[in-house]
Length: 401
View (tube, rainbow, N blue to C red):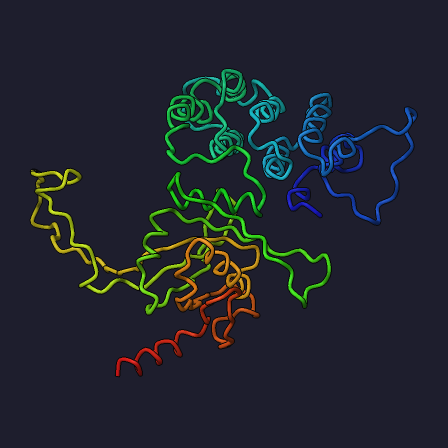
């Protein structure tokens, strides 16, 4: 796979003719390129051979060879920009030592202003922008600079430069804001799949007592022998089970989705099992503020408001029904989600007598599109019939009439 940042690199420094051999594994070698000239030392193991796909070893070996390269090393700003773009793919974007070694490639002294008048005209803008890019990527990945990072920036850009001031702000704020998130994520997220789905559902549920279930559907008759079935992970709390048990079987429930969930740069899709909003005569009355301990008895807000303040707020109040369960599936079609509903019947018997309607949006497969009108029947005794919403509401209108 050809990396887009490879074209911006100087040929002499990174992957071209005359470049260090340890730096070449980080670039793509075309199929029509000739073999490398034989070495007097025999075949040497490269960083790509030591670790599949290059990785931190290839990045460290390339920086080691570049540090040994004598001469002026032209194109250092392009080199740092290309290395920053390659760090996430090589798995070193969260390593502080990689950023410090990258800063060591920059010269010490030539980019420092020579006096207050020189500093007044903001000298070396491109060079200081390069240092800011390094610090911004460190901030993006939550890497806190240390004393070595600050000393390197002082030697490269001077004491009152923009990179040094940004480093000082990062040293002040990042340790304080590092643990401010009440729902932290692990440093290394699992790849999209079963583990990421379990992590995403735990994050949505926000209930430590919620039960996470992994359903293993059995292969059907039409499937090939040894075929891989899509994973199905669902989560449901005891309170949601109680709400579903009190839900009347004459009112249908709906499977809606997919809805996106982002875990950093990982995009997941989840589905919800919800019901219609309850009618007014079945809803619980709101708590009395004078009798509830969860509401203040007296609240005095002395807010100064001017004549230009608008006291009327345009708020769109949309009523949503209760959510009974959540799930993530490897294949978001109607057939796979029907297996999730069939698995929910083991802990929620009321689903066997309740019609289940699918409202699937974009992202589901063509086999389970909501407009095909195919009715599926769940497995097991007393299974409910899955039918399009138009037929169900038409039948209910005829019964009421």
